[in-house]
Length: 583
Ligand code: DON
Image (cartoon, rainbow, N blue to C red):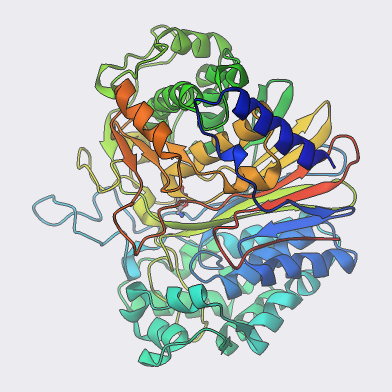
């Protein structure tokens, strides 16, 4: 079968270049296979929800809506109705549609809202608690998707989620452990629902959420209730009573935007991906444009030092542009055309040295392409999001990345409604020039303003070849999202790993600043050593800390076998409760 052949050829390449180790040499799980349709997500119950809706006659969008609402129940760390996201759809005629339901800053938000009287950032204020939330977009986005692109009713799409909330689902050890989050303990409603006020859930327990079930039932009946009805009033009263910023007017003003996706070409494949307010698509295309001038497969195997070097240098350069230019397109003129210009990529390429990193402090942007950047600033970025991919029997495809931002968002559950609110306000720039823990820098194009959407890195991506669907891709991972999607594309297209091996391959990341090459803990040690010898400041992620997983993101991927049309699912098997489900 084809994936086996691919694995074998990758192995032979690796063996013929014996000096370098490659992840492709290790035998891993096989991709899931399906003839008609496939759903891949971080939670088995959510993937099953998608398949259930497909089997009832729904299309890929119905399934995506089902998965989205199901994740709000079974994956409360990131699945959500109190957050936002992006949905990229390729309809059965091959047309792309991009739905932006990113959160928006409330009207009461202002540039310096997270600063104290002395002008210093108040630690945690944009991350934890009532003031950290943007106006949620997920309910509007999912309802819009169903209305404009689905075949079934919203109630039919939401039925599995409502059932999972009212009848409950069984917790795995990892899920039970995740619910111990201190972020939840801080807030009484969250502590009651997710932690039974200290009598924590255990592995094997059935976790029921009756309040959330009722909220979902109300949404299924009338999604506008969340924004303009009694539910909007409930959310606003709760916010106001606790010092939050979201008002009934903010909710009434929320709108989903259909945006023109970013497009690109890479080695004969056509990419459709996320436009601003995501930085993801534009930076991804810039990375791939730079890399298109190299024959990566000839340099050595997947994850070998020669490839890692060239790819990391492309990451560094594209992230410099991300840092300096990007923000909400409704508030800024962004030089997107210039950033994806092939001559610009060529000029960047000329600055990459064969066997040596370019220190970020010495990096000089090629002149004559981009306008002068707005002032560069620093912001915090954080850690919980989720991605799911769907393909149906008509070849309709959906890639959705959705988030509360941090794990369990702001930690705040809306009283009486049973859902968590996001802390997406932290994706904005809190203060000019203040470095943060993660060191991700962004420009003043991303400063806070009422009604503005914070810059994101979420990168749902659909790839075709000669007009035929080839891949559906995406992952969470904050600033590492874009490099993970780039890694996944390179491993698939350049290095021919099968889609399950792609999802499981250990990742590497460079984001310009800090000037550091990050590796997941399973990355081949000898390659990390080679990169260090080349002059990189390397960081083998969290090796020393047994409590942290040492991995980032979870790629939830679908590939289409070009010969047979078979759908191949790749779920990041390092997360033990996800599933690639199909039929
Ligand atoms: O929109 C963004 O880019 C971030 N809020 C995403 C955060 C994230 O992916 C964390 N996931 N592990």
